[in-house]
Length: 194
Image 1: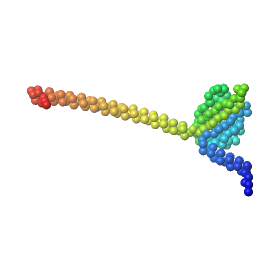
Image 2: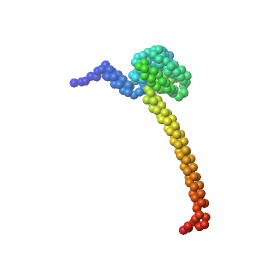
Image 3: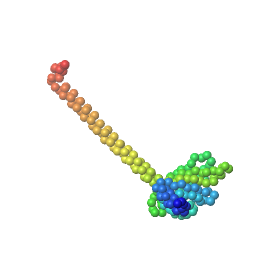
Image 4: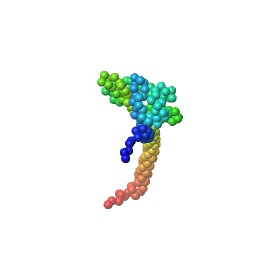
């Protein structure tokens, strides 16, 4: 008996598996055609990052702008247009509001792919949800700031304690000197020796 593969079933299963994997990665690959002003390819992970169906993201940037993602996309388009052959890949972070109301940080990294005549054919990029990273950075900045406040407070308290201790040492030294000078024994007898 020969088992024949089911190409249609395999394609559906592959799309499901790939979509499941992409939704867990937190980054999404895309290809943008500047001549058509259209994303030619967007992997399924882009939907979980932008909070919009991949078809909407692929259809047009204009639709995304209507949905409130326009600021990041305008910045991306401007930076991509300025990139020349030999320039390093571009990257910028942007905070955006998803349609579900969740505020997310998105990192867009991209590079223009040029043909032999040095004309941009396509722009390839990776978009990543970096919300957790930005939140961790904010916590670290707050902790560092709080540590600075605590160090200044503790330093001030130690300086005050040190001044009080110095004053006490001086007071005791004076008291000892006064006692020695007032004692009749210290004036008439030499101190005991070894």
